[in-house]
Image 1: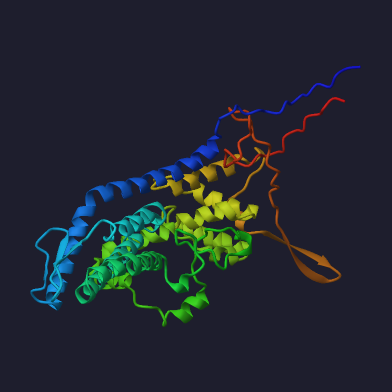
Image 2: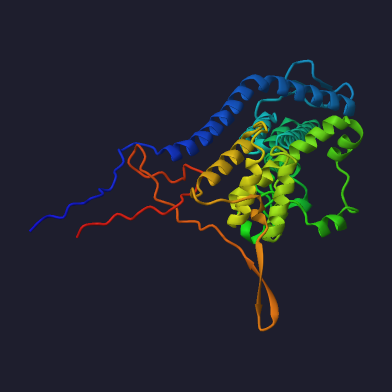
Length: 404
């Protein structure tokens, strides 16, 4: 009796070893947390005193307008109140009275979460901070008025109880306003965190995170109802024409026109040729989306040939490099005896006569896509979870026979 020998032992992972993929995902998250904590600590250390002194100065000035001669801001961070028939009240603006904590929290959230929106996120942060400062000044003003009317006990009561709920509501409202300003308008709904649309995708491109562009009929109907925005006014009346055109070309390079996915195969190939004719750097995101989500081999052949015909163009960004690497891998995945000319997009039509009638038969030769082979084992003994090459294998790997 012989003992069974395991031909392929199950790989084991050393204890305490983190997989490379998990490490790459954890590193950005840990870096965001460190940056957010650093913003809060450094900002609280160096911005607390200037902000609370500013708030005390503004509060004292407003109180001197309401009650002339009964309020003073001569001491930094203090507001002296002189109510009639009552002792002097020294109102100190402490860090807990200031809005520094809320401002730093919103700043950290913007840097860690909403930084992908760039200028939109900055505008939302500035708007939210302005609203927070106004609401906090109103809270301090109401507390000072309560002290002027009913004494220092009323000032402390309003500040500690009503003011705490006030500050909580102001912080939450400031955050919602920041998100509202940062995210796109309502007519561009159903987006991911970066503002890219995920609504009404083609069935063949049903993946999240794709770009968006309205259909021809919708754009014609809503052109008259288009809103006037600050960005449009800047492009129309402020920016030079060359600068506006450069920004438009940059936006077009990163925008995915997924109307291509709604077209039939022949129209998709014609559209791909038109986009590639403008240059690989002009509509790069749309071409990369075709290479990523398209499943028709003829359309992919057309894209690979269009990219290969423009190999002389410079590599201007990472999308162009990815597109050229994909086209190279797709072309190398062909068999040596397989030849595809430039007319791959046009199916060959033949005529067959049967019973006196002429029938047009469209003969389309599709390239078979074999299943993906199992990936090789990594250094830690486990097989990597991602495909390391853009090229599809030309033939499935031969299955190993297990001896009985």
